[in-house]
Length: 70
Image 1: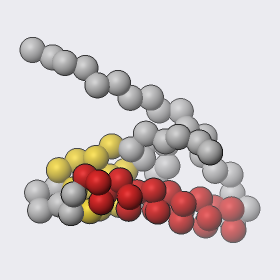
Image 2 (image 1 turned 90 degrees about the vertical axis):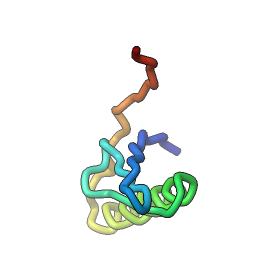
Image 3 (image 1 turned 135 degrees about the horizontal axis):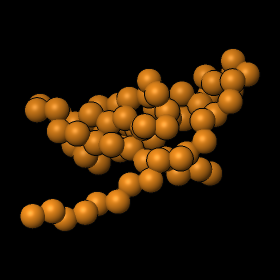
Image 4 (image 1 turned 45 degrees about the horizontal axis):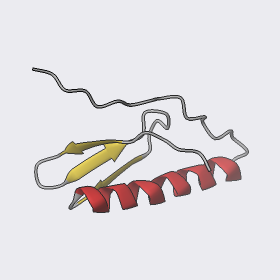
């Protein structure tokens, strides 16, 4: 199983997420936890569709590090 970086942003009334390595795959949720769960489902659904079309699954290449800045 591969690991993909997802970016979660506060969208005001909810949260939105995308995976930089998987263009077009997005999800939203009421909380961060719900958004992560929705993104897992979205990735699985997206990959299922790619497999069904005989297309390759994008390899995870993006890495993320959280840094502190003054």
